[in-house]
Image 1 (tube, rainbow, N blue to C red):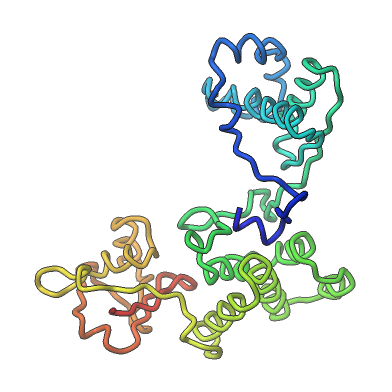
Image 2: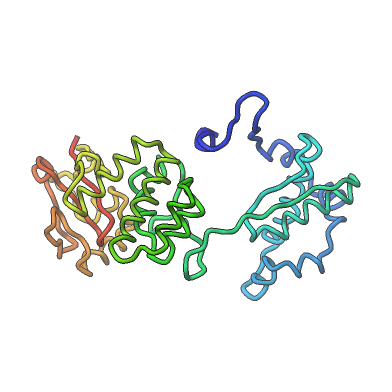
Length: 307
C-alpha cells in the first residue's frame, strides 16, 4: 500500500486496497464447484488464448482454475463494494470476461472489463525482468539505482515508446525526440530513467541514482551515491579473508557461486578497474580500507564498504 500510495489516493472516501483472502479463505471446495464452477464451460475456457498457448506445453489443474478464481474476485468485489469495472493487462482479457459473465449469471447485472497494453520490447517480450529477477517498486527489492539503471539500459528501439507510455512529459517534447539518433538516444534513456525513478522513488533518489551512474560510466557525478554493499567481520573467514565468489554473492551481482565463477572465468569481473582472472582470489580487510568497486559485466557494480 505504501508503494502504491505514490500513484493512488487511499485517503478517506478514495481508493480501497483489499485482500482477496477475506473472501477466498472461507470458501470450501464443494461450494466453489457448485456455486462458481457450474457457471463455467470447459469447452469455452479452452478456447481462451491463455490456455491454448499452454496446452502444448502442459497445463496444470491449478493453472486451469486461475480464471475461476480471478472471476470470483471480481464477483466478490462487485457484491461487496459495487466495483463494476476491472482493469488488467490485455493478456488477462479472458479471465476478466469470465468475471463479467459470472456476475451476469449469478446476479443478473452488467459489469465491464478494460485492458491495458502490455509493455513489450521490440522483440515482443515482456519488459520488467533483469538478470537478478523482477524489477520491483519496493526499494528493498530493487534499489533506486538498479531501478534507474534498468530503464537507462533499455534498447534504442524501445526508449521512445517507454517515454511515451510511462512518463508524464508533454507529448510535444516527446514528439521532438522521434528524430533523435546516436548519442541523443542515450540522452533520451537518461530522461526516461530519471523520470521513472522520480515517479517511483522521488526526485532526490532519482538525482542520487543519476549522479552515481554518471560517476561510474562517464566520470562525472557523485561517487558517494553508488549502490553500496556493507561488509562486517562476520563476512570474513577464520583467516580474515573473503573470496571473490562470496563477495559477488554478498553484493547480489550474481544469484549463485556457479554464476560468479563463470563471470570470472569469462573475464567479466573487475575490482577498481583491474580484471579478476582467478576464481580463488581472496581479499583481506585491508583491501577495503580505500575505495573498492566490484564490477560484473559492463553495467553491474557495487561499492564495497567495510563497517
